[in-house]
Image (tube, rainbow over all chains, first blue to last red; front, top):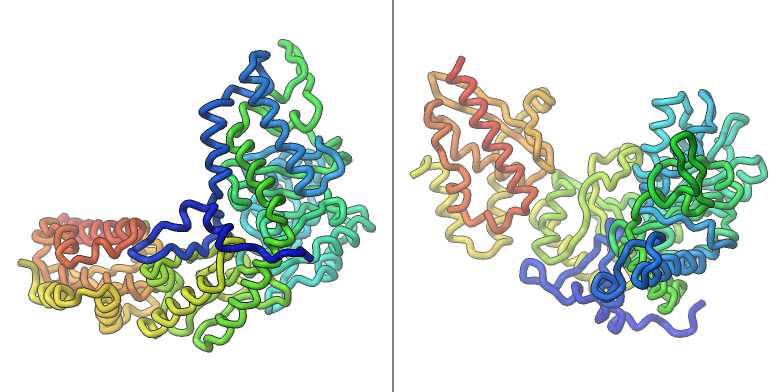
Length: 410
Length: 138
């Protein structure tokens, strides 16, 4: 456990946007599940990259190209450290988690899977970890085998492992639900799947934000992260791909940077990870993501997580006490992401509109997780998702604003 | 001058200066509106372009435009009730001449509507105009 608790006031002061007002009220930003705000160091890194160090990467021999390439390539080491990957070349840069999962679908799964082959995935998944597998179902007859969470939103690893059969070629599962905050024991899933020779893709879009991650300890084959939820720029991301799986992948996107030699007749490819990074990448976004991850590691990922666990416990207690509010997902040990609806005719959009008037930003809708909405029997919910810079006072602001909703709509 | 029903709403909202009270009134207008009924809540009558689900069903009688509407969100239901006050019972050829955006602006609700809601409102107004135009052409 971290020695010193997090100084949240000092942390908040690093985020310029947190001092602004919305609708005449101090901003209470609880839509971190959708995207996190950025600390000054990240904003400065973006500005500095464009102002002083900008050129294309991996191309010129001139000074600025070398500087930009070095800064960009250094981020690979940062991500490697952040995810505790064994090798630097196991980190491939992407535009976000969506590209990461699609890369695995197109480059690894599509050329290898036969009709009737099965993918096991959970009902907790975000559409980004569903649609790329639906493509394989539509296009080449791959079968999707769904596993359901318990009514409280928790997912028993054994239920996932029980769905593995002789035709299972992949397990695709989230580490942390973006709707319910459920933490999935992906290590247990990977242990069991590996014993049966089945690779596992872990969607770490939320997990890497709220938990310390060690891909070697988890034992996964693929682990996707997205920079914009990790206090970094939008359009940045990375995927960890175990070397054995990389060797099985064919290139997905073709273009500059991913080749070794091109003639009229033939092409040979660059070695991974560049083989999977065609075209000019998000240079500045990636540099910004590196700074964001360094920032998280400097604060202490475990320390950030401990503060968020406190927020999760406090918010769970306060929201749980509102007997006119239904919470979707109350799994033990869940992260600080709360999905809720109000008894009666009020729609999630009604709640979010009134919360917004109070300066409280939440998301309302299906959260890119329609199968999970269907599981809970809801057409839409509100979601309050917390980050390391949120406070107990902000939980109170949320609860106060919900009381107003209850008065208006109840 | 819009209809008496609309002017009533405008007067009441003008009197309320606190956004919570204005919302409360809009929500009450929605509550007082008779429900459309499940059998009309079908894709045919659904207004696309709204963040929440909205249904508008026109009824033409004696050359005049009537409609019934509903939404699964309470604030939007109130907006449908206000549109009803604005349009219901107008001669068909007058429907297209109503500057609904300007009338809504008079209610001082504009600053309380998010961009998404404003788009939804525009979609509802367009749907009403389309229904009236189709009835005129028939």
